[in-house]
Image (cartoon, rainbow, N blue to C red; front, side, top):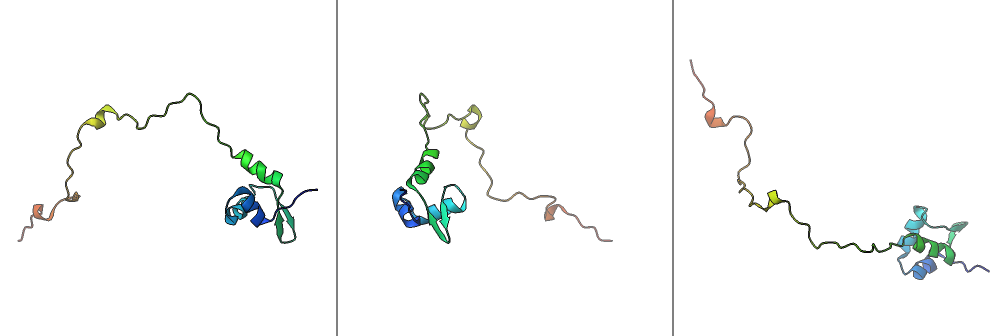
Length: 99
């Protein structure tokens, strides 16, 4: 005989919040049975969710703590002006001629 779990029992079975179980149902990422308005799960269905999401370690790969910088970026950067760049002619460079 199958032991049926409701949403609260399924959440405690996986040790996750009930909102996570409801999101799995909404996204159809877990197998569930609907009895009217009630959702029911089996332990095997929940175990399948966990088995699908297993992340295996990558053997013999060394990940550096930081990436080496390219040679061009090792130079000190140019100081930036604090004034915004002006586009077009400035007001002082305009000369008005009166007739």
